[in-house]
Amino acid sequence: MKRILIIGNAGAGKTTFAGKLADKLALPLVHLDRLYWNGEWAHLSKEEFDAVLQVELEKSEWIMDGNFLRTLSHRLQYCDTVFFLDFSVFTCLCGITCRIIKNYGKSRPDMGGRCVERFDAQKISFYKNVLTFNKKHRKNYDKMLKQASHLNVVVFKNRRQADQYIKKIQDI
Image 1 (cartoon, one colour):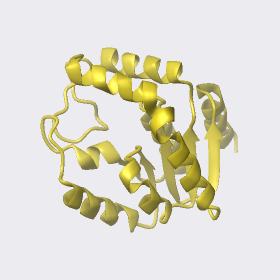
Image 2: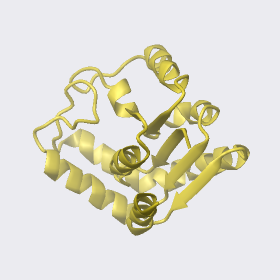
Image 3: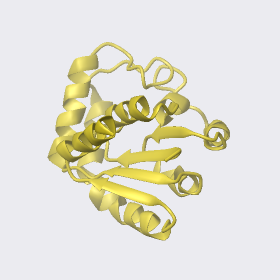
């Protein structure tokens, strides 16, 4: 495991899992949100983001967290392992709510630019995206992962499974 993708619905805990895994494996951590956001909720153009992403993908080792479905098939060509946090919608909604409360009024360290957490109309839309993630995106994710038969794909159905995996690495 030298090039690892961590994917899943918003609020699943991709960033938290990625950080723990990076600590255990001593691999560099790349947050797609940090690459994408460059101002106060302003982001790079598709072309700029793709160029920055490509630089990261060509490195020999990394753990990369984030969805960005538009670039997933491309990222799958570079990785050797995928962790899919396939958690319930309820778990993800709780994760987002906790993240907003914990970071309210601050910009999270995994974000680029100055993206201050707040609860506004934009967040309502974000919650709706979490609610419809499986309906809108699940088939695409499943299809891409099945087509990438060369990859080691690990699916966690809940946080306990993900935490147990991290603990096993620690015990080795």
